[in-house]
Image (cartoon, rainbow, N blue to C red; front, side):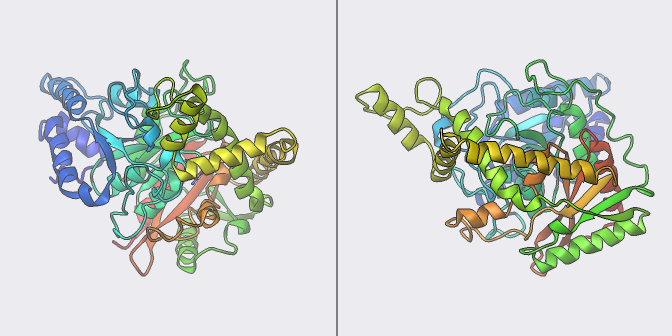
Length: 481
Ligand code: GLN
């Protein structure tokens, strides 16, 4: 048994059956991190003390013969935008470089209550703004499949950690694709739940109407187990939905036969790389052979998604990031002579270039005189985008698309061209804007052996169906190494 190659169920039952211990699992992952993460850069902070305490608790349960909870002893990584009590939480930013939260994010608490062993905090783009992880104030993450390439972003550290066996699973956040796109670049599974399915309490806010927490994992089943763990109403987040949480694993084995799967031509247009197109088309053929009925659907407002997203997300970010003023817990510039100089210099020195760009764009979009032309209009277009999906989902149970128009690009390839970088989000931002769930699963590799992702989108609160389609596909997919 290779301790760093286990799925959640395999790890948990090995601990339960005393074939290994939670401690040994954690140590094996730390040893691998020690060996590999110097070149990958997936982790920003390790929390060994907290991890070993939790591992010990789980091992005592196992020794006493008590049934372990669903993630009992499973080593995981947490994206560094989720607050962890007593453990530095940076959001990838110098402005929070020394921030030690006094409380835990609800999703983190739920992971630990379910037995997970938190190894550490994973690297990300600063305040989750980016698609390549090059915007981390600390260091970039490299794609474990090709160290010259980006892992995607902004949850690049979480995706790379899972892909490189530096964690069994991880939590990420998705505002415009930040779980699904890195999952596709690194060849792992990434699930963005419906908006409101998972509490955002303790998540460092980027754009509150678009932010989601969700799992990155090695298999669809693992993603389902993590989702079940973190989902459900939380009194600390008024946008968390008071709906029952299904047992997502129970429905997985049902075949996908008879399900209607939509394909929208808007997701196969200009800019889509040929190798990605072919891989996704053959995945669609596979779904047909599994008994899915493939139905053409239309999502006519898709072409407005990128400008809409980059107006709404930046507007909300400019407001959310106003709190980093140097007064309370964020970075404060030294040697300032007045309050206004402190604000200015603290923010100037604490924030990186992309974050400043977003704050300026968002402040502009919200300013008097431009509000109607930009922000209000973007909100209206957002409604049209959501309606596109409502109409499509009257005909189909799920919609399949490429996750990203290309496979992983090279470090530095787009970092000086924000527009090119923003266009990489073309297939992912729509689901965030509409509030619907989406999953990315591996569906092939390019000639250069880079992973390609298949995205499956679902109806509001119907994660079960996309998991079912993803699982059915995963069972028959033959993906190059
Ligand atoms: N790449 C997108 C952006 O830069 C999405 C980020 C995210 O989902 N957090 O805004």
